[in-house]
Length: 104
Image (cartoon, rainbow, N blue to C red; front, side):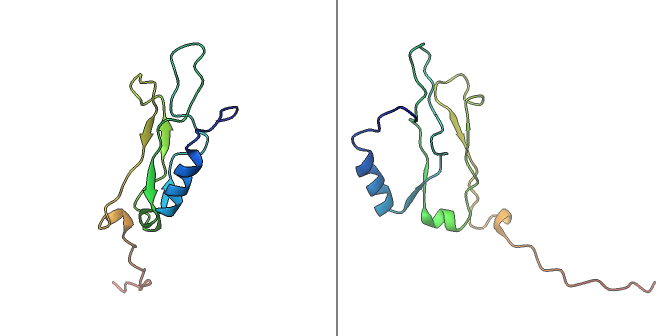
């Protein structure tokens, strides 16, 4: 977040994610926590990751971050859909075979 100091463990964590082929799915610099006190500053506490295989197979939808859907929690709701590998949403539509004149 702007004007925030990253954790001292951030670089080690990023290296570990990269070495294990994980990808961040939450939108970069989008806050996922808002405090209830006047001096609280928006922060990123909730993160979601996938591995490269899930991203390449297009089994996960884009992620939405929503405080409106978080049921009054100070943490945002992370909304996404996961499609099983045999989901109809992932199947290709059959190619059209063309049109034929009906003589009736």
